[in-house]
Length: 297
Image: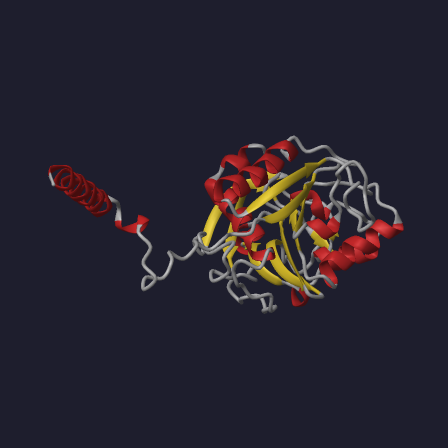
């Protein structure tokens, strides 16, 4: 009888210990079929941005600064990864060897003060235009991207025109914000000044783009300046446009190395990349020049 009682006591102790142990376990370790599992956090799929810094003409000192800025913006925001190249090998839809990515991998292209006739054959040119026009991918042109590919008519049509001198060289440019609702220029006041080199565009028309920023024509010096070719004195500083299904942004700002340390300029290009990637909304509808902005001395 005594051995039987001892066995009962031992069994009771084991039961009590097990019950206490289970009670002390965290609630989430116990299976409860009535409670749904914790939902997974939404996965953010990184976009892929290709930055091209090839120069076949004038060499801007700011090219490395611009390339590094786009890279850092993507890394710090976690919105895109960046491939930096000073050649045009990846501007193709042909399959590439050595783990190189072609245009099918990327979501946007950024030209950081490229100049001259870039090393692209006809198939590469067709692939790049298809990337934007048919695939609906994005393009951002920084400063001298307008001083590029003069012998490629479709490039000028896509970006909006070409460089035709910088009448005032690098100066304190009086700028007017024409579209304060557009994400890339929303942070600028209506009127402001930036020390930069403002390009004069040729084969460019206001009715084909949405002018975001422009020079204040009433505050410019026109005396003894043979570089001024636009008789309408309409000097756009930044614009947005569509090219087929693709979004295109261009700005002449970013000539100097110091400009890439300017929070305003960095934010403009950060928001521009986001916009061409389709992450934000902003109009590309053209609008006439405001009467006040058209006044000249």
